[in-house]
Image 1: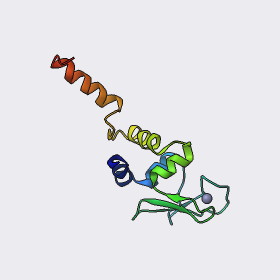
Image 2: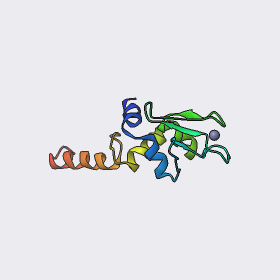
Image 3: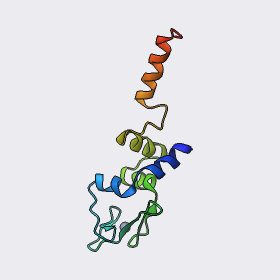
Length: 110
Ligand SMILES: [Zn+2]
């Protein structure tokens, strides 16, 4: 689905994690949200916009991160991000649905 690719490209994974309260050091490392550790081994890669933990082996995209931290499906994760950052990539979202409804009402098509 194209929306997934857009989310992965448009959302800076580090910003999304920082918004969750994860603090990165200067080498882009943080304490892993998926396992307990004292030395940061959770790393984000700006170039690929992905994460990897050298402690527990967790890795993936911003979608994978949301899925794992929230226990969401891929679609739920995408919708969550879409809503949180107001990207409106999903036509099912409230705003576009209301806009569509208004459009049809204005045109007296319903
Ligand atoms: Zn880990």
